[in-house]
Image (cartoon, rainbow, N blue to C red; front, top):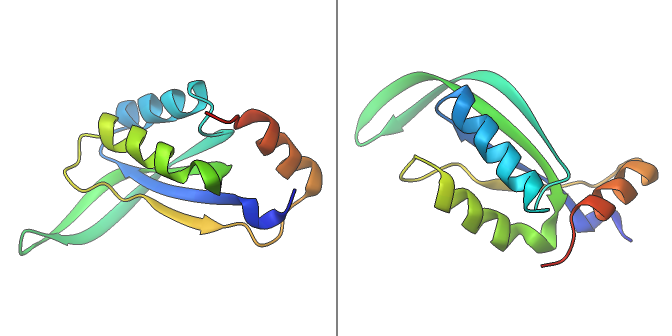
Length: 108
């Protein structure tokens, strides 16, 4: 087990209900060990207009070798035309916590 196997995937959702549904679906499918949900304010350009919206940030802890499946599941369930789906590698982490992620995120 190497630390570079693991990552944090960031996704935003337009409502708490959608964020909770995405989180539960990813954990139930064993694509994520844990998903943390945070209310956020986002400012962005979409279709030539600047928007400022309340959104929910999903902080998904997973294994990076499952990213393609995780992305496909999010795109299948998400209401946004172009959802944020960004993976950041975990460069350092507690060995017991990374081991727990590994046990929770099972192969296909």
